[in-house]
Image (cartoon, rainbow, N blue to C red):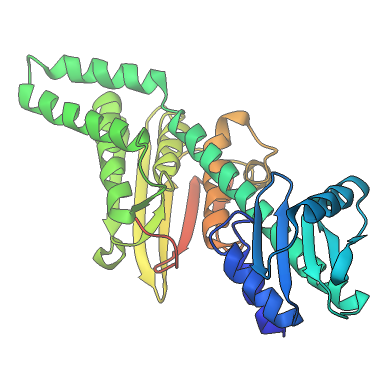
Length: 334
């Protein structure tokens, strides 16, 4: 019975109007051993399995349930029960009870309510994730764009080939940062944008910026959310290299460890108080560090609470940000 209950919950993950709802209602009808089962949502969406019922009777019963938050009884053993998500009514379960006891009906309504609550939470998480990604994509620094174009212009006459290469780098950087396609890319795709960004940053900062990139080929196809690494590199340049008069080194490494890919972005800049780093990931930090917070939240949303950013830092000791992602994750495809 528990296995059937879990399958019903899985099929209702998209809500009463979702593609799995008809199958969920059929399973529920077989599980309860009744003639008819129906689910009716607040927006009028409904799905049924079994013998037809008088729609006027059903409509009146559902209206009563939604208005009073209590069960309603109709003819021929018909019962309508409220479905709850948290403490709110989210719809109604309609059943031809056929002698079922009250406890069985209440348990069925609780199953469906829990499934709808999970669907609501997952939709909220998806909306939040997309909003955070849009926020990151809107964070291209006008100052960086201006400096990049100024640097490109400075090479137009003295070194036209380099100016051309930098213009292509600028196009790749902006294409990746402003992409409106899917939510996922690959490590290879993210690194192409990182290399473009660093080429532009070197043109602006000159010898103040030193870079080391080392990526194991076997993790290049690994899928991960868009802009999961690029903001970390930009943060290292801005707060690590630009904050130091003599400049510094930014290192980006990626290796495979079993079924996971381990990626690190490190700078030898001024570092920070570890408590400040913890505050940033908790949403209590500098508003200018929203990029790190957004990346951390999106990684945890996509891969689970065991994943996310780890920041190793201390004042005067530089900063290292570690990203750990599964090499294979169902549903995460670039």
